[in-house]
Amino acid sequence: CLTSPSSSLSPARGSLRPRASTTNERSSRGSTGKRGPRLQSSPPSSESRALFGIEGTPGSKLHPSRFGTVPSEFPKAMGTDLVELTRRWTGVSVTPYARSAEPFVCGMFAAMFAGTCTHPIDLAKVRLQLHAVEHAKAVEAGLAQTAAPRPNILTVLSATVRQGGPVAIYDGVTACWGRQAVYGTARLGLNMSFSEKLAERNNCHATYLPFHLKALSGMASGSIAVCLGTPFDVALVRMQSDSMKPPAERRNYSSVVDALAQVKRQEGLGALYTGLAPNILRGMAMNVGGLSCYDQAKQLTMGWFGDTDPSKVSLATQFTSATIAGFAAAALSLPCDLVKSRLQDMKPLSDGSMPYRGIADCASKVLRNEGVLAFWTGFGPYWTRLAPQSTIILLTIEAIRPAYRTAFRIEA
Image 1 (cartoon, rainbow, N blue to C red):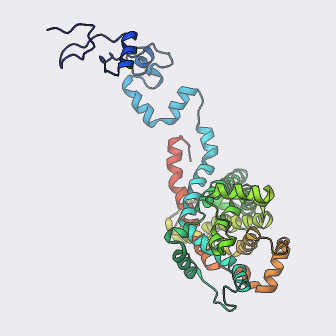
Image 2: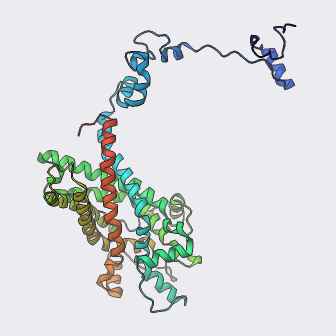
Image 3: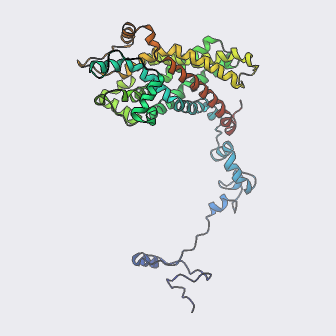
């Protein structure tokens, strides 16, 4: 028998579909829980038809002519021509904005990637710097012998793995990411921007700038970046050194956000900028040694490997220049880094006073109690981290920059 048009039963396979159910039928179906007839799909709207080239008039907002001369060019325009697509939709070219953002975007990705790769070495460096302080506390509490051998990078990392497992060498990595996203981006982006402006004024490539202008660019960008990134640096030092302390004295931060929130709540906003002054000195020394000296070393070593274009140097030139720059950055910035680490990690003594009153007091106590060479404690891991970090940053920037410029139509 034939199925009635008003029947609530589904039609047999291959038969015509019944009409769409009415409002009363839908409400009845909702109350009984029975499944009614399938609804017919509504025809595409005029905007949808115009978008895919079915209909529309030239010049309309969704006509395919806004993406290409024929509808078949629409997928190509959507997938490959980011600048043209943005211009046709907004009427504004993004290329000038992308050109200004290039140093910061490339610098951010390079800094975060390099920071992740070298984080275990940085953790060992911080713990070596704080070892003398923590060991003195352990001796006072009767938990350690007075004459203990000074650890090195391997013993620190092996002890860290024994205590917390392999993942422990990445303690504080979230603070590292936050620090590099702010400090690393600003340090690299501002230095590249300043160097390009100085090169334009001097009508030369940034590599051939006089060294005093390279140093000026490095110091300016380093000091500004430190002012932005010091809160993350405080969190990083505390998270890296927390497991060195007795269980009762540990802060047990769960993440960089938790660390920043707890420091602000328990110690005040000013505690997030503890060690700002030595950190500024360290940032200036780091940029002069790591970036300014890199450009200077590249200018000197290009002739060794037959390079003539400073924008397209060989890997040999890059590795050699990065190694020289890493050594210079470590030698210049490590004393400031040690003072900064101790100021940022200090806690009140039993009488309520702080161990150090400032940069000068900290430096004088280190010199008097530990000797002048103590300022370069951890030089091995510090240089071991800076050399590959500089190389990774520079190679990553060189890899990202061509793709970025191609996507946004930026001329070299």
